[in-house]
Length: 139
Image (cartoon, rainbow, N blue to C red; front, side):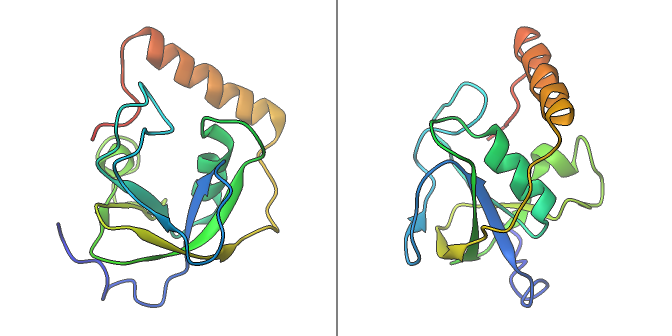
């Protein structure tokens, strides 16, 4: 796994989810994914953009409101190939994945979700992919 730690040492990282967490909690791989077939996740995901974290919070499975946490990677991380190789070459979404836990530093509460029509369009798109047998996350 390439070491992005030095390259992004001053970045603020986010993780969008519906899980209720507190500072000091660890977000770890090995649990069921929030996406696709909900298989056991080999990675945890983080981003340096609020918009990507908002999508994570809005699209996560589960009950309750979406939440965005400020996180700190505890080890090396790499570009998220689910986005960078297929949709956004060059990683403009600043999306990453890691096999190491993410440490919750705090909750980012001052965020605004996407407009309802934009969220619906994304959910419809994901449903079409599902119907075609296309997995949203390749682990």
